[in-house]
Length: 250
DNA sequence: AAAACCACCAACCGCGATGGC
DNA sequence: TGCCATCGCGGTTGGTGGTTT
Image 1 (cartoon, rainbow, N blue to C red):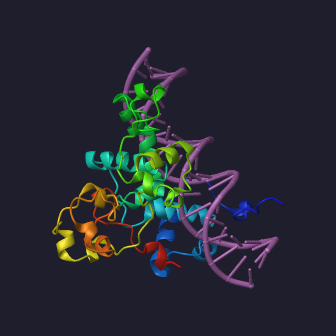
Image 2: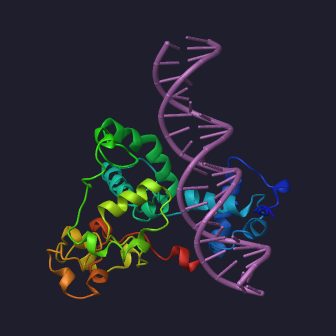
Image 3: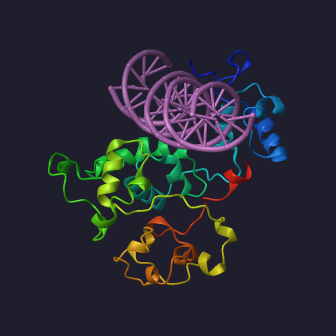
């Protein structure tokens, strides 16, 4: 049995959204909130499928979106995150305030790929292109404790779309915890966290490896709650955007 | 000036995950 | 436990505007 269509296609518009459609969708979500995309088009008086409405809202109409060019810092952050997460655009977008997965995906394919190629780096593996044909050893990032915990943590790295990225993430950061954390929006965090106060984290802690013996800042030895108190996240970023928007709609 | 080509990005499509019944 | 509806994600496509020939 085939999958049923997501909506009745006979009476739905396709293609570019008009201003009137945008206004209707925006007004409806302002009044009723996100959620139940299936029934939204009818309720909002839109001849669109729910899927299309959701995409339009998430990628274009959401008020917290940051439009405009990517900064150099964002470029580098995307590259770092991609080297760790692979083509997990939604996860990468979760670390970039105001950016959508679609936007980042497009930006990667049009700008960053070329940028990396110009640097002589393979955008798929993040290794020097020359090295691609050489030995598969010499991972980019290594940890002393990697071999110990590799088996325990294989579950945390499952689900990567690209086989290559899965392999390389495991090689480079075998005990890297890639689980998403739900945390309050940045603006709701204590002042000392906003201002970057507190002890600086070592690289191991910034990667979520508080229990690693590679921890050199001492935070990993304070206790299991230390990481949640730092306000920092993978790559040493402050937790910023991964807020409860998506949870609230349920 | 016009055609061909290129780059960008919004939108679509298909599929896996999830939750309710 | 299995089925179904729905959501969300990642890959891909197609339209549009800019640039080059």
